[in-house]
Each structure stands twice: as C-alpha cells, then as structure tokens.
Amino acid sequence: MLDAFTALSRGTRLVYTRGLRRYVFLPILANLLVYGSMLAYVLGNFGGWLDGWMAMVPGWLDWLSWLIWPLFVISLVLIVFFTFTLVTHLIAAPFYGFLAEKVEIEVTGRTPLDDRGLARTAIDALGRELVKLSYILPRMAILFVISWIPVINLIAPLLWAAFTAWTMAITYLDYPMDNNKVSFADMRRRLAARRWPTLTYGGWVTLITWVPLANLFLLPGAVAAAVLMWDRHYRELGPLGNGAAPPRPR
Image (cartoon, rainbow, N blue to C red):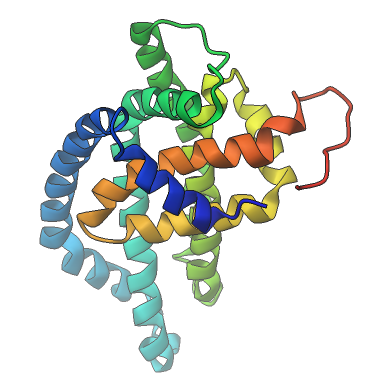
C-alpha cells in the first residue's frame, strides 16, 4: 500500500522533473509574497494577542499559569497557521489544480475527467476554495471558542492538531478529486472511508507547512502526492450514493 510519506517523497521529486517544474514556480511566487506579508504582521502583533489571552484567565486559575501559557501559545500559533494556510491556498488554487492535472497525466497516463478549459478551471477552482472555506471556517470558529473556555481549553491544542490534519487532507486531496468531477460531499465520504491514509497524509502535509520558507517549495510536492494518493486509495471507491461497499485497501 502506498503510504503518505512515500507519496510525499515521490511527489516532491516528481514536480521538479523536466516537463512539470514549469508549473510550480507561479504558486511558489504567490505564496512567497503572502508569506512575507503575513510573517511581518504576525511578528508585530503576536505579543499583544498573547497578553490579551492571558488577561482572560480567571484569578482562581493563576496556579495553572505555567501550563495555560504554553497552551495559549500553541493555540495562537495554530490559529495563525490556519489563517495563513487558507489565504495562500485561496491564491494558489488555480495553479495547484492545473498542476494536479499534469501530474495525473504523467503518473497514470489518464486524462482527468474534467473537460473545462483553462480559464473556466481557474474560475471554478476559486469557487471550490470558497466551498472548502464554508466547511472549514465554522468548525474553526468552534475550536476558537473552545480555546477560550477555561479548563476545556486544555485539550484545545489536541483538537486543533487533529482538525489541522483533516483540513490539510481536504485541501490537497481535493485538487485531483475536483479534476475528476468528485463533488465536495463525495470527497469527504471517500476521505472518511480511508481515515488512516487521510489523516497521516494530512499530518505530514501539516509538518511540511511548518518548515519556514522551505515549505513554499515542498507544497507543490504535496499536490503531486495527493494525485498519487487519489489514484491508489480513493479513485476506486466510486461515486456517492452508488450503494456499493467500499473496497478493501490494497
């Protein structure tokens, strides 16, 4: 069975081979501009955000400040990470969708089912990102509220970590699935049916995104890895509502 780490390793090597590397430079440039702007903003405001959070801690929990402070830091970092990720993917989505198409042709010899032109694909990719945002943001807001509730917020970093892995899987595996006319609801069903490959893939992609600057050059590899994972784990599951039981993983 193709595991997530192997897919990411193969995908990263693949996108920088002749014939494919031309498709990675525009998303890298777009992400680099967003990365620099976001980093400057966060460094200028991080201390104030953290002070505001600590001021919300009730007096009777002062004795737990040694534990609450690092948990607040982790939660705040995760929130900043989510915001950065959502913005960069909204910008890079049209490029990543096109890259996923070229990778699928390269590695499988199949042309994706998508028969839209380049311009239409780019426009629809932005619409698909908005669909993903409408799914992610309400759940992100719930976790944000939990992060402010005393005692309950002690588990917030764990919840954020699990949600982050799931979100990263949705974000990247959606590119090949959208190219193959898999609806957003059907995509989530397929990801849930292969929960372990989904979460391990999302977890590895999350780790990649935390590597400063280098992540800009590694994320196109995550797109290629998503194509490999799609072809190996999710393509065979069939469309939503076909009544067939999911086949066993190979």
